Length: 233
Ligand SMILES: C[S@@+](CC[C@H](N)C(=O)[O-])C[C@H]1O[C@@H](n2cnc3c(N)ncnc32)[C@H](O)[C@@H]1O
Picture 1 (cartoon, rainbow, N blue to C red):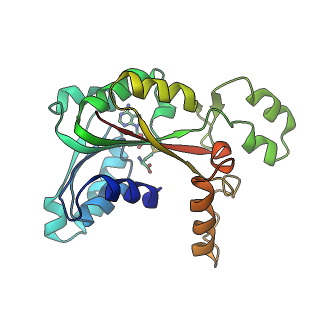
Picture 2 (cartoon, rainbow, N blue to C red):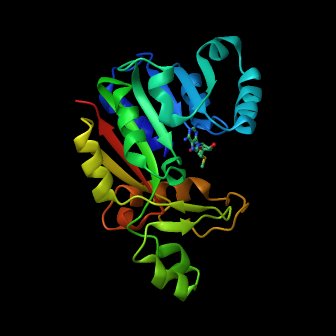
C-alpha cells in the first residue's frame, strides 16, 4: 500500500514539495509517521484514545524536525468539517476505516471537501466483491457460499463490519467531485496468513508479487482490500 501511495504522490505532485496530509483513522500512525519522515506536514485524526496514545509515544521518539511536522487530533472522521477548513489538504488518507462506518458516503464526501483542487484521496476498504475468498480459501464452504450475497462480514477481531463494492465507491467518488483515478488490490495472496505470522525470509519477493498482482487484472479484483485513489477536480 505504501508503494502504491508513493507512486500516486510522485505522479501528482512535484518532487520535494511539502504536502499537507490528513490521515483519518490513522490508528497507531504508521502511515502518518512515514509521511512526516518523508518531509510532509501531517495531521492524524483518530477517535480511539489508546491508538492516539501509541501514536503520540512513537512521535515522541522522533527527532524534533519530524515532531514539528506532525500533529495528532482526537476526533471522529465524520467531523472533519468541524476540525479543518475545506480545501486545506493535498492528500487525504482514510485506510481501514470505512469497514466500521455504517454510512460511508457522508464520511467520504467530507474527506473530499478537505482536499484542495488536484488533491489525492486515498481510501483502503475491504473488497465487497470478493468476500467469499477468505472463507473459501480456508475451506469454510458454508461461509463462502453465504459471502456471495452480502457486504457484511465478521472481521478477525470478531467485530461485525462491512465491505465496499468497487462499483458503488466509484459512483460515490464521481458524485462528490473526486473521481476514481486508479485502483489497486492489496493482499491478493497473503490474506489467509495466520495472525501474528512472522515475515518470511523472502519478504521482498513476496512484496514484489503482491505489488504486481495488486495492479494486474484479474488478480487485483479478488484482493482482500482495495486501494482507491480519487482526485479532486
Ligand atoms: C483498522 S485500523 C486502521 C489504522 C490505519 N489507518 C492503518 O491503515 O493501519 C482502523 C482505525 O480507524 C479508527 N476509526 C474507526 N472509525 C473511525 C471514525 N469514525 N473516526 C476516526 N477514527 C475511526 C479506529 O479507531 C482504528 O484506529
